[in-house]
Length: 488
Image (tube, rainbow, N blue to C red; front, top):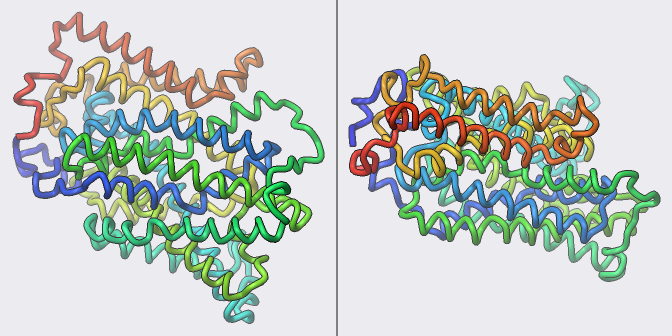
């Protein structure tokens, strides 16, 4: 295998280069802990609670979340294979299907979404810090009387401070992140159990928790169920693209498969059950549904308990935000100009974009979270996942030429560095996912936007690319010989 110094200077830096053997130390326990830290986060609670707020009952919400996470686990595992096999991150993997220049299309989409998620998580953690400060020092609440861009002055200080804390942890590297995950990951589960037990006792047992508290039936239940399922899938659709950013540090395929399979769906389902039942109980306790965990903590009767819960929110939010959003988006942005943008500079750009997107507006209501943010994510990231999987598993049979991924004039150069077939497949997938907004008869396709986009792009890319490779007698395949493709 060529060294990173021998790669085309415009397509590589040390963060995008393949991992070396001594960097591959992650075991299945590390991958499971990573997912425990990412799945057990306050936004998982937000999503679970938002489904109750939108009108679903407890068992419908749990069934939707369980199905969504089992579905999205499939592309996560499939797109993790390249990372574990070749030691390369998502931005480099995307070059095989989109081209060495065209990969910027996929990484920019993923990077913007990651930056948005990063901003949302920073906002959630900063709200916990703000509430913690005003709980201990009530007079600080007066600072929020000064409002700047829809946020109070104290909330701005907490937001920027927590943003800086996330960047500081990342600055210490992936090894420090792995150590942080191992002790921070389980903390939010403790928070969820505390809130659930409190809700159970205050509401008067399990019965009130599983009652249907909606005063009016849902007007179009099938459509709401479909949209909710896509939101559950879209929640981790980002990692369905770039899980290889982490599996490239794994010791083996076995470690990444076992760790992710044990860590992701189980923890998401368990945590969501707690969120759904607790949210349902708030209708009994307060007379209306409270889907925001931080808002619920405000109403806890014990100040000491509230302080413990808020500290847990802060640690848990950082636990998920750095690996799931900051690291991934930094890789994606670095790929735009590897020679000039290191991963650290990518992180700074991510932080800026995440702030400019005004994340406090994206999660202002349950409708904004589900129908605007998560639905939009599904429309664009579903097709990208379909293209990546079709290219690697269908067209190339899991064989890549790693050196060519870093060359301007290699088998992945296509047309001026862009693969037109990938662009066409992406456009077809996005158009199909949006079709119901223009043609009422196709509304079901838009309700199922992630699945629609994934399926259309997967099939169209596989057929078109397969046909092109046959016509060129394998010249455009980029598969090369197995010996050259594998890391040496």
